[in-house]
Length: 160
Picture (cartoon, rainbow, N blue to C red):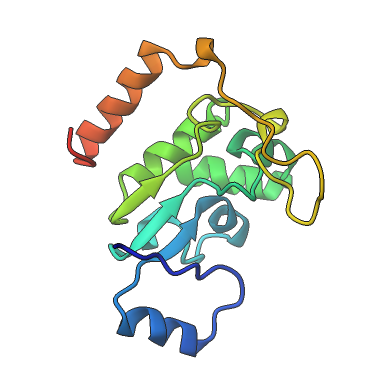
């Protein structure tokens, strides 16, 4: 059974050594990478194959919601890095990390749907209002499926 080391937050040398000793892929959350600036190890060009890259996790805001709330400095860096006008930031981020060397890439469905904070899944430390978002039937479209399939095919991901 494949295991993933949740190596988010403050990472000590012991954590890095344990992950490498057991050949466990770590986690790369792109939203955190863009907040860290150009030398941040979470950015797609610095990924390693032994990692799982995410636009965000169930504990993060959607990428669109995140982008609307970050500082102008983070927005500008994100746009420059992604060669983006910011209009479709979630898809720009998805395309960037799908093309990275990360062994696995995962995006919450809210991001390809380009949904804002209203579709956020979880609010850590909040005792109510979590896990309420559900995909609607009209959001599960053939167009979205084809777009994701094309992205997988272009980057050789999955059994496509």
